[in-house]
Image (cartoon, rainbow, N blue to C red; front, side, top):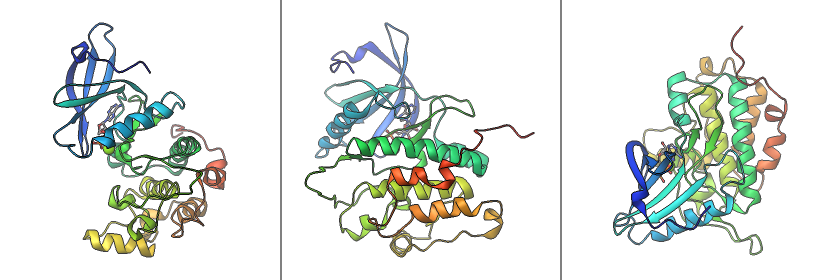
Amino acid sequence: MPAPSTVPCQYRTGKTLGSGTYAIVKEAIHVRTGEYFACKVINKKLMEGREHMVRNEIAVLKKISSGHTNIVTLRDYFETAHNLYLCFDLCTGGELFDRICAKGNYYEADAASLVRTIMGSVQYIHSCGIVHRDLKPENLLFRTKAEDADIMIADFGLSRVMDENKHALLTEICGTPGYMAPEIFKKTGHGKPVDVWAMGVIAYFLLAGYTPFDRDSQQEEMEAIIAGDYKFEPAEYWAQVSDTARDFVRECLTIDPTNRPTADEALKHKWLSDITPHFVADP
Ligand code: ADP
Ligand code: MG
């Protein structure tokens, strides 16, 4: 990645692609080259006191961008008096969240294929000493509109570099409640296993079309997560789902993070290691 650009007028911004907690992401065109990017615009005033989060996101992306084909690449960043701008390769295929909503749920073989790809990226991120902490279908983007487009991990805003030598664990409560692991709520310290838990929630969502810990209130949701209280129900949504897939979800949703599989181990689970056809059209 080049040094930070100081000339924001090199880009012209267009339509809004999405928005999250702290940022609006807009399509942007590089005026000279005509190349398209996704530009994350972060309002400095809104981030006041939390500027370190953006610096952290840039530092993490510098460490891992370009190292893996399924992670969004940061190409440029710059700031003005009011905003910070992060320019990424543009993913035109939208969020996994919207595809699940449009489909209802995924065929099991397609779900396994997606989970295997994402878990492979998680394994890479973890091998770099980084924990993502906000894996969810809103942060998983398709590179193109094609049905079999590459899936990309985005949004490293909550990610952290783990200090391997100190065996330090993180304690702040952060993430998106439905995807957060029990140890985050318990404040007993957390690390890489939280990403594997989130992958379990994502796999469940892909297979069923709804998430496992959805409750009427956040309090009930948190209690359900801490107790690992979820079921493969209603039965009609799970009738077509194999025991191998259920076992994969169950393993990722192990309450004790020390007993949860690592990303490495999860990739070796039968559900992901048995090569399944990739988005084969119905005969
Ligand atoms: P936040 O930290 O505010 O959640 P994100 O980085 O998740 O910000 O970006 C918010 C949304 O913008 C994403 O959920 C996605 O819809 C869209 N988006 C982010 N990066 C890209 C990209 N590279 N290409 C296309 N859309 C993107
Ligand atoms: Mg996000």
